[in-house]
Length: 252
Image 1 (cartoon, rainbow, N blue to C red):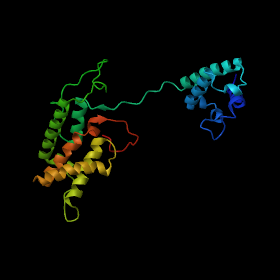
Image 2 (image 1 turned 45 degrees about the vertical axis):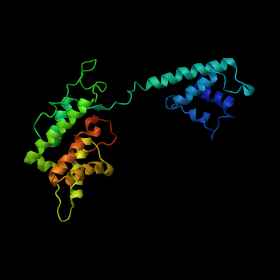
Image 3 (image 1 turned 60 degrees about the vertical axis):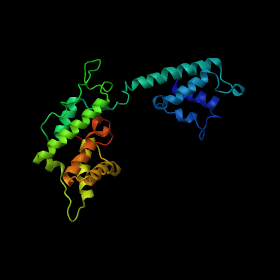
Image 4 (image 1 turned 180 degrees about the vertical axis):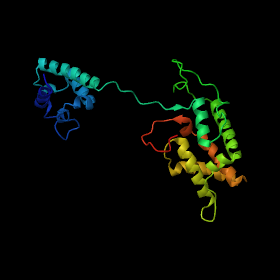
């Protein structure tokens, strides 16, 4: 039995109910690549043939031998089509940065030369001995506390270092740029790098809220920017690695 034979048999026995315009059309299966691309539809046809709900009993002209041949053919050929495509990995799990990755990323991001991950809890190795397995890189309350501590200490170090400070604060308020816009631009640059992707305006707005709160408490412009940057460095978008379809020069 060939693919064309199967389609002819299905059209003859099922075409009246499953034609163009219906929720399912036999015509959608006429191309040979449908065996893999329409695997779900083929599986549904096989199931309906197996439980004898298709064709309906009052319209059934399909012989038992033909029904069995169809069922066997669909099962065999759809499997072959799927296997011919090779094994496909499932979706990648997003995972937290481990200690070494965190330290290296903070060093490159802030241009500082300290081991920012020293105070973080030790990472647990997975069953294969790797320390970058997503299932072992958990976030516990102590992790949250230590990540905030590491972010604070790293930014304090950067603020005290002229080169790092100038790299992070590239825009200052002046007669043309107000404080909020200057802070936005500083945060935009850091956040884009930290998140390893383009960021939306509303994401920056959240960090600007921290900036404005710091200013309201009496901190100077620069210190308020650094305060808001803590929020960037404890964000899950920074601490967790995710797959992203948009690859930009912002990736570290």
